[in-house]
Image 1 (tube, rainbow, N blue to C red):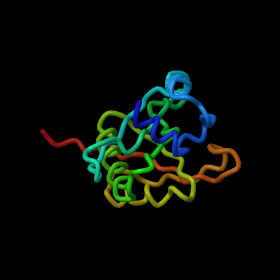
Image 2: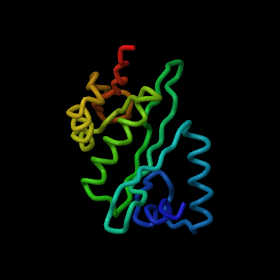
Image 3: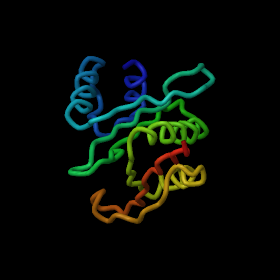
Length: 150
């Protein structure tokens, strides 16, 4: 929670109103996770401060479908571009072994998922004009790991 609080103080959570006390933020953050998310992960990476959290990823099950949709990602203010790319690739590569994921990426985030494609862990499946109101979003999905022959 202390890392989430530090990110909040740097305006990383645009869906939580600003100016909250630590206790108010904790309550709002917990309410968001419990009411809006079916899964939440903390992404760790090696930084100048050590191996610490650099991001949070939130997902929800798609209605009537066997996959999770990544609904939000928050990168800590101290996360470098390298931390973000390595953290995203590592997260997706690990989680895809247990769950199928779908991501709707705004144009400013599209390149990150294209890098995941270059690693062979995601594929582009189209563009959505309705998933994020008022925006077009590139759609990506994870590739399941290949089963090894017995």
